[in-house]
Amino acid sequence: MNESHKSLIETVKFNCDVSDAKYWGFYSICGLLMSLRALYISNKGLKPWEHIDQADISKWISQKEDNWEEIEGESFKELEIDGKMYDHFDVDGINGVLNSEGLVYGAGYGVFKKPSFFLADLYLRNEMYGYTVYSVKREYVRDLFISPGLLQGKQIFLRLEPLRALLWDKFLESKAKNNPLLEYAFSQYGFNGDQIVDQEFERKFEELTDRYSGVVLYHEIGEVMEEFPGWAEMIYGADSKGTEFFLRAIKDMLADTSGHGPLKRSINNKDEANLGLCIALLDRYKAKLHLPIRNAFEKFIQDGDWLPVDEARKEVYARLALLRDELVDAYMNKKEKDDLLNKILELKSRFNY
Image (tube, rainbow, N blue to C red; front, side, top):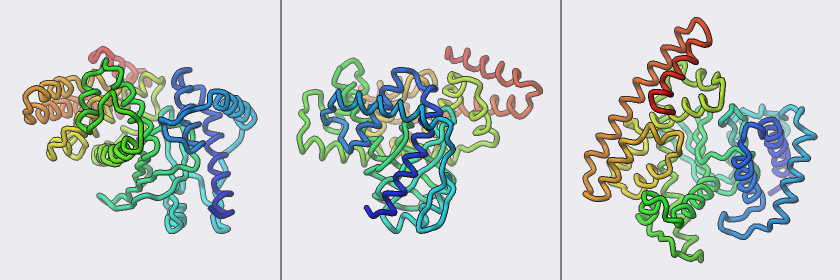
């Protein structure tokens, strides 16, 4: 890492800290603590299963909070590379310079419309459907927002470090044996609850992370293919966390269940492991939207029949496409803000949301 890179890291870190300082209050207490813990692990270059010194992380969090208070009112800085200044969201221009040096810069918006940034080592790069797909491993700096996949402009970022951390948390959850589907999904990758963490485990977990990144990739491809006029604006105009989560859940499930998404790809490839984990990892905000798929997969575990799983995927996609159309129509034709809010409330109650 040369001196110019160190300066770049410091600038990206500053922008990450400014974003966190402005948006940390949008997190629940539990969510904030979990995100801080993950950020600490990343900053220290630890693997998610490595020991964390509680005194050190407590001190680190305290320093982080003090820094937030100092910079909350600051603006984002431009990035200087080889004497030229770049806007902090100019991912095309920045990566046009950094890729040749083995680095990748990512920038975009996460939940709560939070600006999100990272700088990482380039692992793989390829082109799909007119998009540049970056896979990155070691992240030198990032903000609180955790997402294994990020779509910005014509670039898709697959972030293997946050993905590995997510999968590790879910593996621990599977060991508790209170989520049979999650336990089953990990068993398809060759993991069991009694497994010890050794070099062989770490090797297999890296393979799992690489393999499951394909699910993340095809989720992002699904989002690209399912982009709908007015949909992004409606999400960014959400009036509350609950509304934003509901709209994002619909958007994510449309991507997952579309003909270009990861569920269809896993079914076509008869990839039971990826399909099982993809379904098991759907969060509670999507639970009421994907129930037919979960039910079909639980039956698949018993009889091995792929057809009902694909039929359930099509059923969920068709229902959610109609739901999206209703919402976009209400958004485009609203006379008052309450017209859209009332439609969202109506649809949320339809799903007992």
